Structures are given as C-alpha cells and as structure tokens.
Image 1 (cartoon, rainbow, N blue to C red):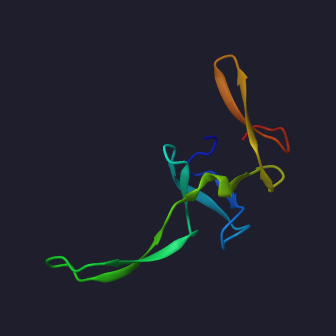
Image 2 (cartoon, helix red, strand yellow):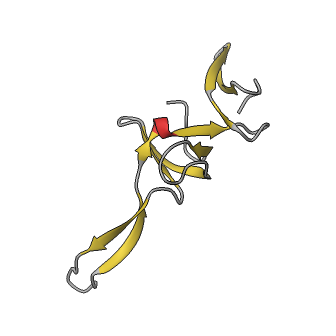
Length: 100
C-alpha cells in the first residue's frame, strides 16, 4: 500500500464523503485504514469487576480503496506512484508530479 499513518486523506465513499482527515492506523494485511473522526460507531462495554458498564464511541476501519491521498500542492485527491532514484523510493503525486 502506498498510504502511511499520519497522511492526510480524503474519503471518497461512505457517509463521510469528501471529508479530509489524518490516518491513525494502517492494516496492510487486510488493506484497511483507521481514520480520525470517520466511521464512528458506539460500542457497549460490559461491567467487569470494579469498572462500570459504559457506552463509548470508537473509530472503525474502512477499506483503503475508499480513501484517496490529498496532494500537498493542489489540495485535491490524487493517486500516487513511486519514483526510484538509486536506492531511494519517493512517493510522487500524479496530479502535480511533486514528491509527497
């Protein structure tokens, strides 16, 4: 996957379409990402010993195909390609052609 943690992305699907947030975690094995403030669900936690039961809000993962990286120069969603120079790999925006 060409997306990493703390990248700024634009959601291109779901109810939160066109919102821009940061990626908190990336699961490369299942091709899923957890994005800050997106796909929030309520989770009920059962009472255990001394801690009371509670209802909390948690961010669930979404598929990586539903997000697009935000270009740092044009501020629009873009695709990425990897440019190899010697031993270095750099991610490059398809829209602007500049390194990310």
